[in-house]
Image (tube, rainbow over all chains, first blue to last red; front, side, top):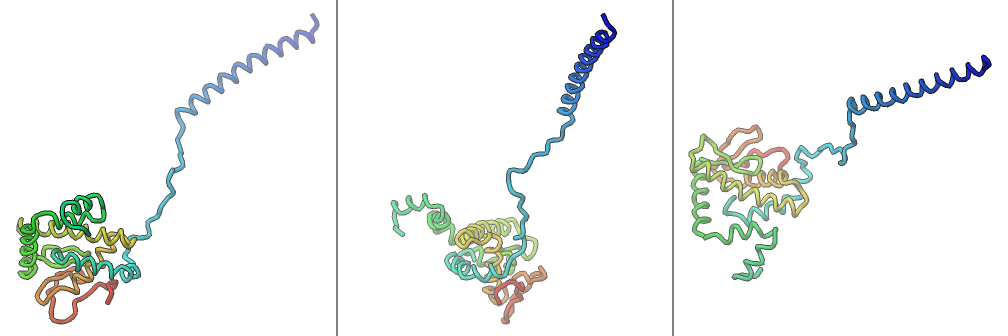
Length: 78
Length: 135
């Protein structure tokens, strides 16, 4: 055997060992990745900001007629 | 609208007419007495018109006055919800609008809620209305 051939065998052995370590490291990383994972899920509904908290005078004027009719029709409770 | 048995059966299937069915079908006697109780409570200053379209106790209510307030307000709520669904407005908007009208309709001596939240007795003059009420 020549020195060169010995070196080649050694290099191959080292490479194989490194591959094993790398595989194991990947497994560990995947496992820890799974347990320590924070799930960030996009909401399935659009975010709604309610801007209708206040009574709009425009609406009051628009529905006044219908409200007054309903009050007249139900005079016994108004 | 048709009257009689077939008419009232049909009414049951229409959601919009539920209020009508509830008020028209039970004996007229109980409706009459509720109205009488309500009129009496109004004129004696036990209940008043609130800005939100419902009635409230002017002073600490007895159990019967409290029950009367709840009975009236449940029926009113139904009316406001119906108007809201017809007009596309929110129920609280319909109720608020009703509050404006109810306060305007109070008679001399009856109580209503002023914009500052206090109970005020209606005088011969115009009532104090919320600035958002149709003036």
